[in-house]
Length: 613
Image 1: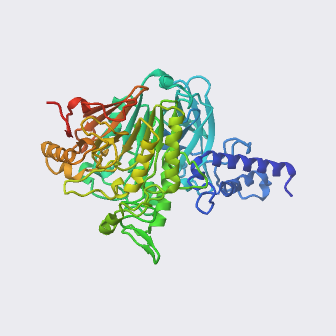
Image 2: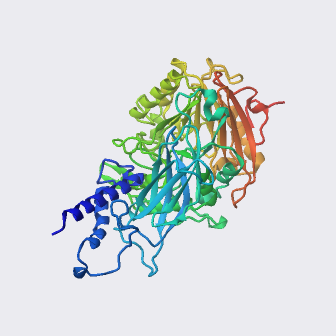
Image 3: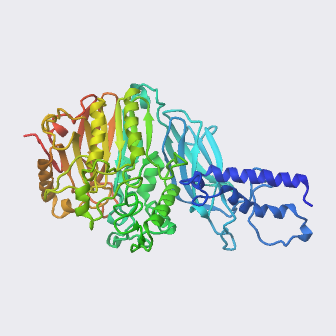
């Protein structure tokens, strides 16, 4: 009969194991309270604890087979773990900074033992993490802890570093619990100012810079924009508006960027694709040096996703319509969602709302950053090509929504609260172009806000009716650059395009990191600029358009002004840092429009509505 002391030891060991599984937030997201979809950490700990029993039985009655080693004999603080080494295969990352905490991420893959064996499913890898105030990791750690990972979550680790000071830079590193000499690269991150910090005191009184990205297709080019931003700007936070990965295969072999696997369908597929993207050295370095705030668009699951389908996989009353990937939409969405939460340094906010990634960050009284999900959450049916004529008849239906009622109410309430707490700026990070854009054939993109006009009008009405100033909308998705005043579509009575009078804010929409822009790249630069000139002439609110170059933009803001700089990468067919600033825009606090002359009347690519003579 097992002694009481041994039983208590096993109980203590089980509790410690559960804690270390729970410390890794990946095991609990995105389905905290849904064991059938998530990971039961109690069950995982029992599976691991089976190996501890060999230390609690008489040696004479035990078959002494090879087993996973342990790191000390006290099971309450060091349960059985893999002790043959780990490889931090994808460096480190951080994200979702608050004033006292930030998410830290890594991936710790077990190395084979001396006999060539790898751990079975019962054996976790243990990693420790430490956070320091100094770049050389000297002094006492500000925060530290241990967490388990396993094959169940693709060996990813996501922990929350806490007890941090607001508006402060930190440095962090992961190590192998079983061999502390094996460590990850050192990452740098930061917290943001507490919500009541005066705007002119945020970031130590210096302007704060956000680098904004979207649409990074691996096979379409090298991720030079990430590298340039990381090495040649002073960005405090990196923002990604979606299409971080693409589900398609394509052919990037001619530039050394062929993707692995097939069109994404299963959890293995999505993990493999995320892993390949994160192997890019420029993307790794950009994640290593600063915290990221991210949302998904459609390609994190599949093209033109909406709440019940995509362009090639839809669930119907009769069952699934199968895609070339071999999976129906519900399965793909579950697999893609889980893999995204494993691989991205993002928080899970609501245990009862598993798909919610829309969230708000209060950065002192300088700005609120509201990150939306206009794609996966509750988006009504979109343009799937074959149904375009039908969708065109629905674009003005009052109940039609990009966001779902819950998210829309939350956004409007967040905007009002931001004004009431006297934040200077309200920045809305979301996926698709908000302002109306009439294309060269006279049509509109029904997959953007133009296909959901009533939803757009409700947001604009809320801003106008409540006199909410200094709203900046960010957008990606289109693979081109668009800078516009925010006003109701086709309103030439209340809005003056020449002066910006009557606008209620500004939209900055960015091109892709690599994804092609189609119409704009069919000729040379001169041809592309001619296309842009047609766009700005056809659209009242649009002040600048450019689509020839791939790149990103930055926002630098303080309590008096916001400045946007658009960066163009000269060539993405090979790895390089050759780029230039193609245009600069300014918005003065309280003016709710782009400062005139727009971009100083001169840009290096694209077309302005009112260029300088």
